[in-house]
Amino acid sequence: MVELLGAMNSGAAGVGVYVPGTGTGVFDTGWNNPNPAVQRYSMTAPGDPIGVVQSYPEAGLSIPGGVRIPGNPHASAELGGDPDEVPGVTRLDTGFYGTATSGHRPGEVVFGPDGHGKYWDDPKSTAFANIVGVIAGGEVTGYVERGIESRWIDVGLGDNGNGAKEAFDAGKAASAGALFDVDPYADPRITDKPGLTVTEASRLVAGNFELVWPEPVSVPVDAVDLTHGRRTDPNSLRAVGPPWTPIYERTQINPSPEFIDRVLANLAAMTTRGFVRDPDPIPGDQPENRSYTDPRGFTVSAALFYGADPAQRRFAIGSTSPCAAE
Image (cartoon, rainbow, N blue to C red; front, side):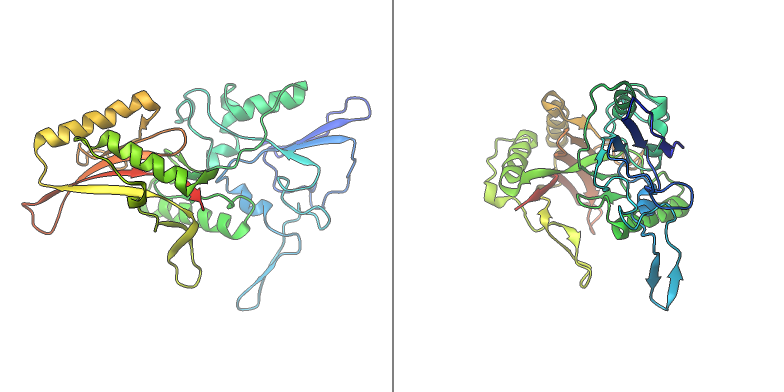
């Protein structure tokens, strides 16, 4: 781990890079060299557990029961402990992997614990290019907020820098890994992007469904389901919005083999529109079950399952949006 690349002086100025740092301090003290002539940059991947430490205050916390938890010695009372949020520090994007490396595929978003440093093994990654850009004085890519999901983890817009949500995500990942012997961060996909409205998302959801359904169909935009919120109400523990995830789905009872084949062919044809087939969440499961996602996070899918009556097969075709605002 490279926690801090110290000031690399160029005349009176310098460059400092936190990639990713536990805080703005040095050793066991807070930040004590606020030199305005130094250009400072930070870079932390979404889902990197170090984010929990970054968001942890210098003074510590008191939790129910009167238990006192020590603070983060790398934090700073004046500037805050999170280098990604300190005034005067430019946060850079960790972005995407550029080559197949350490189990990650080209174009995969940098996410989770591997985002703490695996990009050092990939000179074509966004993060590696940013470090080179800072050192060489070249171009860099600023931070882009994204909501990212794996099968087990959901890092939503606004979670980065929120210590409670980061701790929840890290705890959920640790539990999934321990209980099911899985990598809870594997096969991540971008699901949320700021700026997408419910109206635009619903229109695209309806249009994508029309392309997948095996017969001519027109889906009214107002038929798209807008009841799926992406936040959890702390009192009711129910999903609420905004943001929302617009969804449209139909289920065919006892579909013919020809019906299923046309759906699967239409799904495969979505690759000409930028969609990529997602890894199978359960290898060896129903071969008809599959989903495709585009770079914006829109997904089309099909799933075959049985109801209470073993003789009844249900074939669900769905179209889903990433998070959308009002």
